[in-house]
Length: 460
Image (cartoon, rainbow, N blue to C red; front, side, top):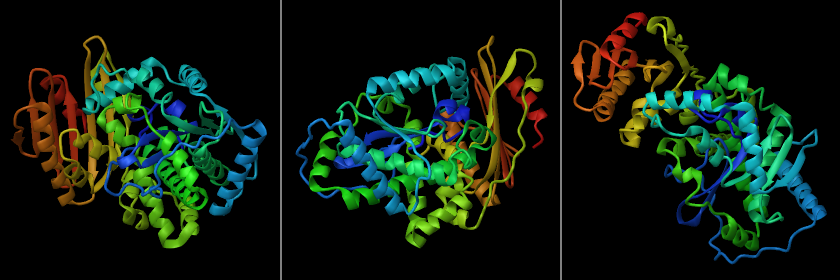
């Protein structure tokens, strides 16, 4: 798996750490069926179309083998590499360092990575941005959560910069779970050596430059690795393997993933759920050749992943100019985040107060957007501007209708309806959604005076 964020630094996981790794996270799906993901996310059965990674109905009877020697482990890894290369029709021209890592070693590794690449101040800024969109509480300890998340229930990871592949286990053996993890992670090795993960946009610079392109690429590579993993299991797992798999593939219900906010739990699975559906469609249509073609003409938005027909039609996002708030807001304010939300995060925002289907329908028809968030530390105040464009007038109207319901639920009371505006104003905040036939502008401010100042500075 690839631990890459779905939204640049501020709206996803700790990018500096995450973009360097493909991480395999483990969670249980329904009725004991397991969905193995690699990571910028984790997964539960988030949709009725979740990947059908369902083994034969064997009764789990643990069959743990004796501890393997280093030579036996190396031989098993060699065998899996050959199997994966044969199944996928790709080769690895260069070597990769392969290691087993214990959970304790993983936590130490992650703490060191975070200390080098992601500070508590950066995590605090990300929290402020996410809180402005109603995704987190301002008091949420994001930094500590990330440490816990990347140290619990992780099965494996691939570091493309160091060319190191890790399988996380305290069993000292390559059992069924470890073997399928290795197969998944080795597929990331093949992707990296044949297409280049960084070249696809999976790097710090890639996420910062175009987070939607990187999110589309992440869904492509995770979706492919998940499909390959499924095909590998179907071909090479024995009944004893499935027994061992079920006996040992489980997630601790007290782990960080299950303590995560609802939107984050769902977001973790985007590359493995929707990404799988996207790649499976390509594979069913033209085999691995069709998947190969997607690396040459990669999906450049979450919209393309959610609506593959828009990928086929090459419907690229519209560019929306960034709004700079610092000069308008004056002394004491600093910009903490700026970027593109995309269709996927638009739906996640709405879903905090709307039904899933309603939120998804309202976000469909997204054409492009840009948001900016600023904060005044002394006054402990946050302001945000989110400018969106839509494919059609009806798409914009659908979003406005849904946002009214969202705003009434989030901000309390009923919106004041003006000429092209919906406003919610109370003692703790002031917010309005302005709209035109194919665009919308949401402004979130600490008071009415600030809201009016921001409205006057935006070309809408």
